[in-house]
Image (cartoon, rainbow, N blue to C red; front, side, top):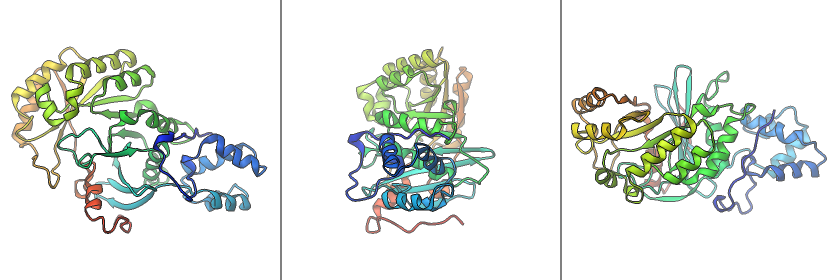
Amino acid sequence: MSVTLPIAAADTIPSPGLVKPALLEHPLDGLRAWFAERGQPPMRVRQVLGWVVERRATSFDEMSDLPKDLRSQLAEAFTVFGTSVARHLAARDGTHKLLISTRDNHNIECVLIQDGGRHTACVSTQVGCGMGCVFCASGLNGVARNLTPGEIVEQLVLLRNLTAPDRRLTHVVVMGMGEPLANLENLLDALAVAGDKNGLGIGARHVTISTVGLPPKIRRLADLGKQYHLAISLHAPNNTLRTEIVPTNNKTGIPEILAAADYFFEKTGRQVTFEYVVLGGLNDKPIHARQLQGLLCGRKAHVNLIPWNDVEGLPYKRPRDTDLKSFIEELRRNGVSVTVRHRKGSEIDAACGQLRREAEKNSQDPQPEPVSPS
C-alpha cells in the first residue's frame, strides 16, 4: 500500500511546542528519516500511514504487523491524530456531526451525510471564514487561520471511521467552514491523500469544491486538469443584491465570476453548479428567478437551491413554500436545470458553523465531553 503524506504549509502549522507531532502532519521525508535512524525499511512509512488512512487504526497498538518495540517507539514519538473529537452528534437520518478541537484550541466542524449506499464527508478548510456572507454562521467571527493538509485529511478519516466496517466514503464536499479556494494549496495536498487508491480511494469526479467565487483561484483550479466538480455560491442574480449578501462581491463581481466559471468548463468539461441560498423575502422573488435565468442562459450550468436553515441570532428566515415553488417554476420554465437540496441532520445543527458557535458561546467549557450517538 502507498499513501502520499501531505506536507503542511509552514505559515499555517499551529505551533506544537513540546507536543508530539501527528502522523499526518509530519513531512514524508522526516518520517522516512525517523524510520531509517532505527534501522527500519522505507516500507514501514507506507505501513503506518496505511493503518491510519486505510485500515482505521486509532492507536499504534492496533498496527499488528509492526514489531512491538517499534509500536512503542512510535507511541513515544508521535500521536496518531493531531485533532480530537470534542463532540459527536448523530441524527435519526444517519447524519453525523463532529466538533473537532485543534491543538491550538480552535474548533472546526465536519459532517457525514449518509443516504443509501452514498457516504458523503463534508469538510472544513479554515477556522472560521473571512468571506462575510451575511447568513452564514461560520463567518460570524471572521477567519482565524487556514487548516493544514493533515487537519483536513483527519476530518475525512474520522468521518470515514463512523461508517460501517464494510463501507467507505464515496464522496467529498468541501462545503464546511471556510473558503476552500483561499486555502487551495493545502486543500489540494489533502485531496491527493483522499484520492490515493490505497488510501481513501475517492476519485476526483466524486469531489465537489464549493467557493464564494475567487476568479484567479478558479482559473488555477481549472488549469490543474483535475476532474473535481466546482460549485459556486452565487446567492443573488445581480451585483447590488449579491454585494449585500456576499460583501466580498464588491472586489470581484458576477461577470468576473461567470467568466472564470466558463474558463473552468472549457478546461475541464465539468458542468458548474451555482448554489443559491434562498432567503425568505430577500432573494426569492420571480424577478430574481428571471434575472438568474438571464445570467445562466446559454451556459452549461446547474442551479442548486438551498432553502435557508434558521440560525439563532440572524435575522433571515426560511422562504415560504409557495415562494420557493414559484421560484423553481420560473427557472424551469426558462430552461434552467435546478434542484432543491434536501435538508439533512437538522436536529443536530448540521448547517455549517452552528455547533462551533454554540461551543464558543459556552467557552467556559472549551472541551465538552464527547456525546455518543444514541
